[in-house]
Image (cartoon, rainbow, N blue to C red; front, side):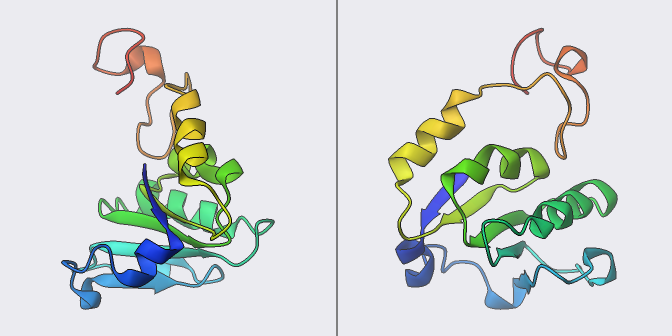
Length: 136
């Protein structure tokens, strides 16, 4: 998972992406009702740490709609949420200003693989086409 500081995100660390290809969804929007043609990145908002509706949005976008572009978590994003974000289908997170990127990376590295399937790798670990025990 790609991690960005709020400063890097505001400064436009990914300026190569056409703004017309970025969709920003509030956490109460229905992802199934969105037109995704030509969209390369969807930003899902976490207005508060305790509001997890963006997890459901991410899962719907990956599993039901087959969205293959970037899913970016923005807003009140804390280190504690990163593993669940990754398993829900997010590939990028913009950390809240008071969060340490080095600690966030360490948190993600803590869990190298999960036995169960998730939003991206639906098969359990033993049934993935890679060698037994290897992360897909």
